[in-house]
Amino acid sequence: MTSFSVEAPAKINLTLHVVGKRDDGYHLLDSLVAFAGVGDTLDFAPADTLRLEVAGPTADQIPEGENIVIKAARLLAAAAGVDKGAAIRLTKRLPVAAGIGGGSADAAAALKGLMRLWNVSLAPEALTKVALSIGADVPVCLAGRPMRMMGVGEVLEPAPALPPAWLLLVNPMVPLHTPPVFKARTGPFSEADPLTAAPSDAQALAEALAVRRNDLTPPAILIEPVVGEVLAAIAATADCLLPRMSGSGATCFGLYAGEAQARAAAARVAAAHPAWWVAPAPLLGR
Image (cartoon, rainbow, N blue to C red; front, side):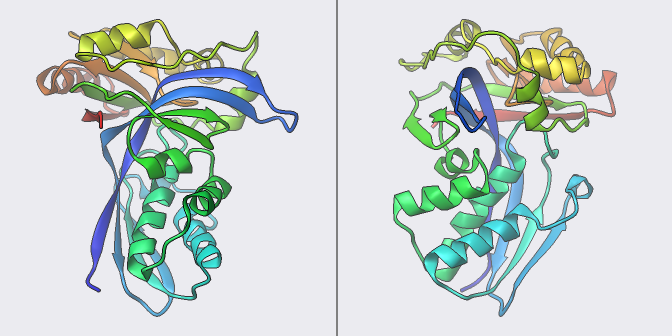
């Protein structure tokens, strides 16, 4: 088999309601998850041993230790009962610990690519079990399309189709790890409020999202006040239909009707904050 590539797009929590907490301390979510047309890339080629090369503009942000791609490979091999190698190259473009599922997207892409390279398959339940053992966002990243994500990430339902729209993703290059954000959250739990109808256009999507929220925004700002600055910078751009934080932060996004508006907003934010990571991208609505 010749080499091939698998994309690992950024995961975007368009909404995120914290609806409860399990006895083991894990929080229960109800989240509308979509993906953006920007992300990492994994290249696969046959090899006698399992090896990983990491490159790209944010490669130096990856913490020391076993990479999540290698973890995914070892868990897949064990679940499938195979002992095969692979040469994997990860081109890292997304910031790390950023609320857009960069590591989870890489792991999901690794599972997809290695099942193809090794010519193996797992039953859906078994694959979900492997994905969830890697991370809570890996199952939804495996789905790779708009989904309603519930539980701790293991319960997925297809979401209504999303309309054509563009996003501006902005990260202040400050890592924000998930556990402290959940720990800092206070107040009552939210009610589930899933999107039940397909919005007709970007404006209708913005209106639907505006009556919902990301419950992790206040604790994220409490831990890293710069998140509030990012939201304000996005909100101040022309034609922004909605600013919001994704996941547990620190990446925030603006929603725009089209590419021109998103790129103009990106230019404005990048000029004002040259140290921030700024990426306009289409919303992948199907």
